[in-house]
Length: 390
Ligand SMILES: Cc1cc2nc3c(=O)[nH]c(=O)nc-3n(C[C@H](O)[C@H](O)[C@H](O)COP(=O)(O)OP(=O)(O)OC[C@H]3O[C@@H](n4cnc5c(N)ncnc54)[C@H](O)[C@@H]3O)c2cc1C
Image (cartoon, rainbow, N blue to C red; front, side, top):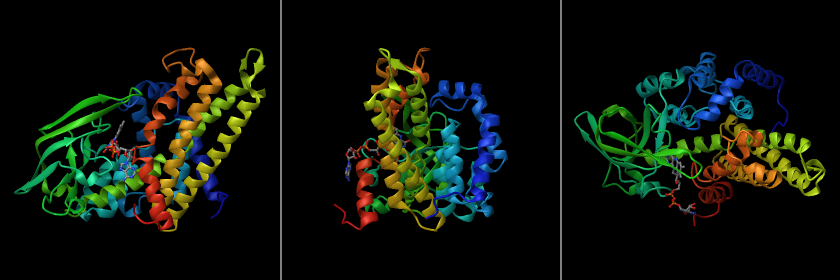
């Protein structure tokens, strides 16, 4: 593996940085802070459309599907710069659903959905989990039955984050009730405005909204089943693999860590500068090592993709390490900043606009988003080291 960026990669990084410098305004940052996960505000939408107009929405997609055909390392640089600056993040529609459709869809389905995703016209919520199916996704019960040329769907999805703002759902449904449970599932696209779809908000611990989604005789055209019938479990696994690649980026955590360091340089406690306290320095130094290690894990994953490999174990490693590192940075920040670090983002006196407190509340979600870390450790053991399934 090369550890240095090539001249072209450095030029690309500078181009992205220049774009961010010119377009990521303080007003947009305020809007993002206020919006949380309640959808895109007008400034965020404008920023996304400017990215789209440059073709950066489909950066690593093959040219035949309207992409720029750039490398996974270029995509890594792009995401690293966006997230590192606090810009709107690439949605899972682009980083997880689109690459899956690209691999499993029929030519007609690719022609139908990929241009609409690239035009930022459609946005998907991810409908895998159900009340009785989380890690054990193959236990899902939502049923789709073919009626002429229409699928009729009935059931309930759980933890359907963004269902209240998305235009469509990327839904795992049971289409083959008599097949073994892993082979009876298919992936389907469901428009959120289809009659029979109901979304109910669920507010979880950090104040984020997720949803329950109910499907009551929802009808979608036959070719909204993507790829092959009965292969949905494997397609969902593929999409989750792509999702983990996104969660494995350390850029957001690194940004908070740098802001914490900036505060430590300035603040004093009882007349002693924080920067001189041995325990503070030691804690920050340990985190700095971890952040560099996380960066390398992300880069290695991107590099493996560029070699044509599916980096399943590597993406799980990056996801486990980065999600737990986010919690360590939040823990350290809370201890170092003391009571001030616990102030809510709405509180004007909150250091770092309350971002560490926000990270403290939200980081645990990363440990199970895209599949729990316990399960990721099993994947690392099995796919990375050939250990038997437990
Ligand atoms: C805020 C939030 C947002 C979410 N967003 C979405 C979303 O948008 N779309 C979606 O489809 N889902 C979403 N989820 C669901 C999430 O992916 C699941 O919660 C997760 O997969 C775990 O499933 P579960 O909650 O049923 O827990 P379980 O599967 O019951 O697991 C409980 C515990 O047992 C452990 N465990 C289970 N099986 C194994 C095993 N084989 N080996 C080792 N340990 C095991 C798990 O690691 C976990 O610690 C969201 C959940 C939350 C809370």
